[in-house]
Length: 163
Ligand code: GDP
Ligand code: MG
Image 1: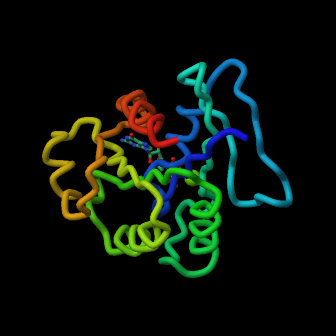
Image 2: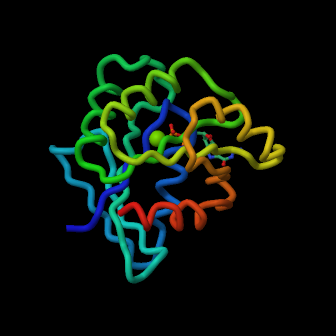
């Protein structure tokens, strides 16, 4: 069994974009399991050939802001259950929103390692973008631009020792 990394965060922060970057490769195995995982997508990250891992995109709700009720809550719980490491994705352009804190509280209850990925830092000052999220107190916080494939290798480097 490959280790599992879950991408978690509110809608529209860039989880699916990050998923696509991490799992894009010539021989990427599409590991979707219809029926069981209706709202989640599974892929394999092979950035480090010797240490592939499964990536779970907890998306499927893009644009729907439902707090932590209903489907989002269920998805977050399932992701927490099956993952070894949680990548908490936030949006540098929107800044810190109440829903981010709600999701992080839920993630923290799991006791599993959390990496905070501050996405959409393209065109922004990275230090300023990171500073806003420093209140989370997550040591492993890094800037990212999933859309421009920047910071994704650093993310993988941060993930591998935790798997
Ligand atoms: P999800 O709902 O969390 O899965 O978010 P998506 O991956 O669907 O992305 C939501 C929107 O943000 C889309 O319009 C993306 O093109 C955009 N987006 C994602 N990553 C980035 C990024 O790094 N920079 C910018 N500027 N936009 C991004
Ligand atoms: Mg999505």
